[in-house]
Length: 327
Figure (cartoon, rainbow, N blue to C red):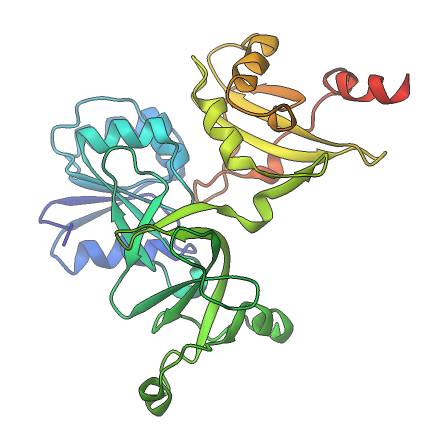
């Protein structure tokens, strides 16, 4: 549907399941597929130059690199597709206004993609409806349907659900559960017998689309309050001059839990002003205690944000947390 005759630019590594979609969506439609060197695909300026020089019409880009892509005209580029993690709202609004922008959602365990949505009016958190031969369920902890608009965990069923993890029987049983909604007809043909527990929190919208809320493991408790880190990141990104941002929950050896806001900008911003900005939109317990300025965010080989490689705050940066406890 979205692939037309022309050049298709590929960024993801062959070991990442998204590469299967990149390769065959191009070749099955008679398009030319471009496989790039590590030098080009890790640098947003080089990516920009390549898109222009090779007259690329369609490209897959991880959201982190899409946010850094120079905002040139790109006269040949018709569609941008992203997957792997959410796109920030400002980036989604810009590219959604200038090109066809598609959010492709799906864990590896459900074979590449499970849902698809063209992003319009900055709907970056809407992941769409299930693709053909795929079923989605929004369930509570007891595998009961969550009412329309309520937040629950996303489970995926259908032909794309894999058989499990090799030599990891316990983890397979935990994540691939018996489908309590399998119909009698499906039982007769052995279809849709298990559903995959994604760990992603979503809600159904009135139009049938799914809205992505966040990861179960990205919800943390600070001072007794349950916090969604993505909500803080959205406000962090709204501060003037900040191009990218991520928030992590940390814990000191003494058991003190605190939030760290990492951000990318041309120069370090005034952290007191940044805290005031966040305080104007969020309750105090959701405002990071520490901010760390970075020249760029660390990425995995697949171009996704590498949270594990984010630096630990320095002792000086931690003093504001430790001093009230020590004295």
